[in-house]
Amino acid sequence: MADQTEIQAAEAGAGRPLRKDAERNRRRILQAAGEVFAQRGLGVTLDEIARHAGVGVGTVYRRFPGKEDLIEALFAERLDRLSAAAERGLANADAWDGLVGFLHDALELQAADRGLKELMCSTSHGRDRIAEARERLKPLIDGLVARAHAGGALRDDVRGQDLALLHVMLGAVADVTRDVRPDLWRRFLALLVDGLRAQGGPREPLPGTALADDELERAMQAPAGRAPAGRVP
Image 1: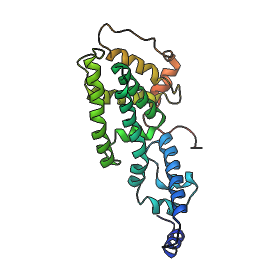
Image 2: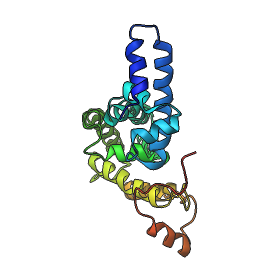
Image 3: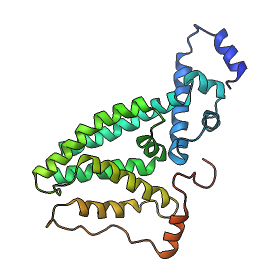
Image 4: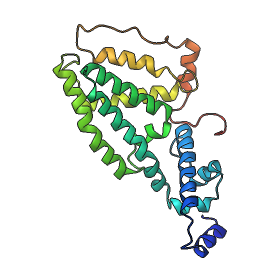
């Protein structure tokens, strides 16, 4: 529930020039939400975000009446980054490098931001925004696939929909290895890229090494989507 004192103050001050303060608080809340969502996922509450931002919960509710409003405002920019990554890939003169570059950039974004990964797979958070983002991403990804097919670099049975599920797979790898070896997803991306390459293409060395037995055991025991141990700094 919003802080009653803050609500009364807002009502009493209606019409006064507080735009700079309001915008500063809005940016502060968005920054805090981005940090908490990135580390702990979308399950956190507005109260927790307010504490992390160092503002009263009433301030959060005035800027964002519900968590969905905050999620949509925050991740609009994150989703724009995914579109920009696809557009960079399409602008690359080498179709294969453009496709691989998109895969790398998009997975790097998702590995660093648990909330973004959850949002991209969500059916309940910001559905209108996600539908819009998917509508915008689909032709870009299909274009990357078509160019790589035309150049003979991508195996001809791969479709744009396959890339979406491959992102989900590698996102799960990033989740379970986050506290063991956070960059391990790069190794599996390299494996995936070799699997996507048309027969006869060159093989790149895999980055990093396979997990040791004890590392694998720790990773497999980590529940997907869990919050990392410890408090958000």
